Amino acid sequence: MAVTDEPLADLALSRSSLDRVALERRRSEVLSELLEDPRTRVAEIRGDRMQVVDPGDRAAPTAPGAPSAAKASGQDASRACSAGALGLVLRAPQPEDRERLVLHLGRDGDGTAYVGVVSPGPHEDPAQPGWLTLRQAGEALTRRDAGLFTTGLALANWHATHRFCPRCGAPTEPTEGGWVRRCEREGSDHYPRTDPAVIMSVVDPDDRLLLGRGAHWPEGRFSVLAGFVEPGESFEAAVAREVAEEVGITIDAARYLGNQPWPFPSSVMIGFAATTRQTELTVDPVEMAEARWVTRGEYRDLLREGTVRTPSGISIAKRIIEHWLGDTVESVTGGTSPRW
Image (cartoon, rainbow, N blue to C red; front, side, top):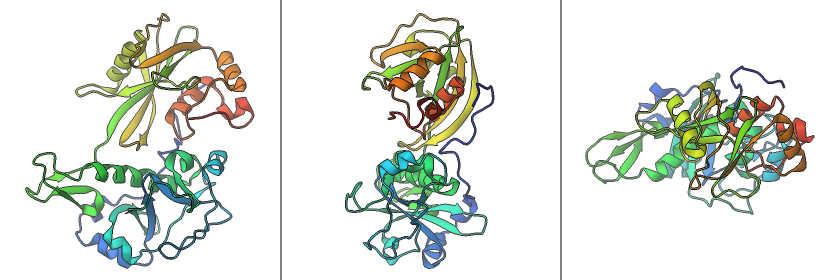
């Protein structure tokens, strides 16, 4: 991997391969039809988790509460860095699904429909192996399953916090395949929201990268700068404002690198590479604990020493750092490295 000006490709959470069939969602009977069809594939969502299996054991449970054959753990997932090393447990519809929140997630090229079912089960049950978060499993999932998990989690998060109408306070009910909530009193429709945030490398005239540690982050946890886009603001203006606010410098330019959904709970991260001629940092203590410039050699040494914790493998932040570094973190460390 060499330093390049090319945009980022194959970001972990931007790999969805399904047709979202937006027009199909409008039919009021679509979910009932899908739940009656044994060919429909169901991905169950429990809190922020879905059940995954490794390539050698893809058996899915056949009934509610049936013992799972899944063997994957959070530690296993963190080691399975290659996409496709893990898959979601998918099953046929069950009668109990009709009593739960159902989300129409799309169809594949063969026409198979995929739905997400939000279970009232616990966020984490040690007796049920293989139930992982998207942070744990996302990097190692197939394209299809990464898209299913990302979309399903984002929709589930939205439904959990939008049970009441923002206009009149009355209850809302899901409709259009789980992609709309309708006010039961006034009939107004409300759609899933996505909060855009910019995330950027900042490089000085000596090609050093700016790293920052958030005000509440532990020692050694560094990343590139990021922040939410404000109303009436372009992405490039948000990059300039966030850099100025957090470390007190002015950027000269910002070049788009790529973007990916970030359903924690409802964002999309838009990546940029920015340059500056200023190197004197004035850190905002409310936002940042510290900030520092590093050369590529210094950053490699910090990685090998284990004194810097890198962002997670599903994060665009890690890819932006590697884009500047010209290497993957794993190639520098000879394997895995401390992540968060």
